[in-house]
Image (cartoon, rainbow, N blue to C red; front, side, top):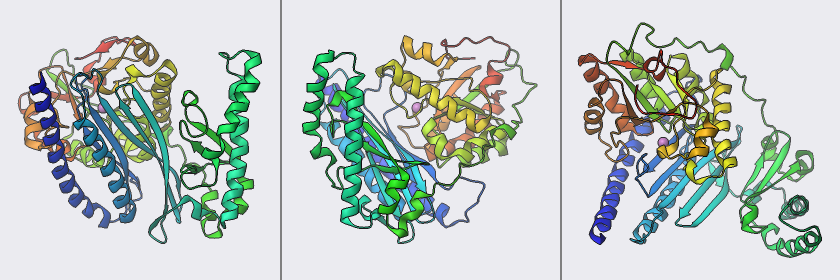
Length: 484
Ligand code: NI
């Protein structure tokens, strides 16, 4: 038993070393991307992901962190350093894993872009760590001055120290209001206990709201509001979770330095072009009941490699299905538009790749519905398929998804072996009506695709989308399908 675990750990460490090599190669490749011309038809920011541990439920220990890849080297370098230290933290926790541990370690990171003007880029990062029965979820924003080419502290957005303190005072007043609202609506408290409980809470909030950089790690500038995120335990007991408060932008504006005033002008939302997308559709004449078909599915994107994959599929005349993450679709909208317009199937793989079997109903609903909303907004039609991260699901997940749940017949372990030849060999082993699981977050996987298409085609297989694979079958919401 002990031997097994030690070997397991060694295997993971080896994988990590291999990953390092793969990433270095990837980084070298990317230098070319930066220096090439900026094409306005592609997204300015793309999603990069580091994945350790596979998609299957047997994998107990998992790390999946995504971070932005921009046209600015100093931003990319900083984001990469940050994600590297997060990965180091995961690897060192992994070394401490107790052989008796039933639940594994899960680390996840995703990001959102809050401001992107000519002067400033604000990246909001969420990191969650699940270690046995302790779970943490933390938000941090990073502020990049694009003109000076440096990362700045949130405090330097304010004209003076006094202005920052005034901001903190305003924020604290809103925290008080928010806590009051929560206590009043808390049905688990007796009416008589509410006032003393609230008084107690107030005694604890100074430390978390005083004007320090640490307390104000996440000040976000939205359309009409300035949002401040206070992490779990920062201003209230952990059971209350993250506390978000909103401030009127007009009140905050006089406190912000002139050079950063652009942070207050959020441009009008990009025009929704979803409704004008007309998918070319797949190969209408294919009948998978009569000819052997294989569906290639790509999970966890869109990513920095997805456009390259779309180029390959276009060249080979093949259609695929993409199980995408809502949070990444939001960043790489144009890539999703393109995939749709080129006739691929776009499907739901949750918002940010959490293990849905461990979330409550509200959490699952948000993960699935927000993603459907975001995708529909981009592609202009309803999402038809769902695949839970790690294939992990329970009754609530199935019920809430209410879409056909599509798993796979072949897992080429492309997260583990970042070698296009090996990955291609495994994908080519797909049988008739099989569904191949792959990840377009790995360059090696994308590089495997031409060989896979050629080999499968030469065996007489048709490469199809899920729509084509399931054509003529009536699929039910909440039911699991693993093959065509
Ligand atoms: Ni996945």
